[in-house]
Length: 164
Image 1 (cartoon, helix red, strand yellow):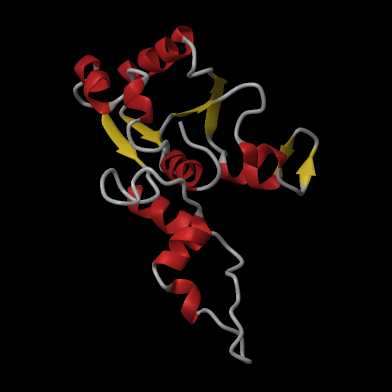
Image 2: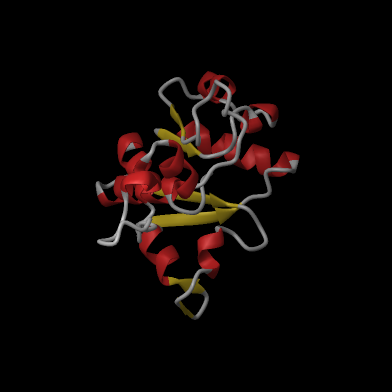
């Protein structure tokens, strides 16, 4: 229940360690990383790298059938990774408490941009936002002192490592 980099990277690491990972993607296009260049046929290099060692299923979470598919998957899972804004999955009946009622051993990991509570909790966020808020961008400069954007998604990958 994740897309782009943090969740897929975390799940990739778990898969590298031997976990059986099922990636849940929303139809019709799936994870937006599928469309990133460079692409070889159907998938991009980024998507292939971040989603190795995984099976995937397309599920429309806006339907009762889609919610039921995720509930059934969660009954067999050890870990559920999700990267929605806080409360989004709970409103669909897929929050930690109802899923743990069916599977008490389930580890429910929410990869949120700004945490589950607080003044920024409901904000959408991306790597560059977290780096700016944390002050990282202010110190990242070239030899002439000009600001330089990092060439990798530093915050996204760090968040994934912490979650792993």
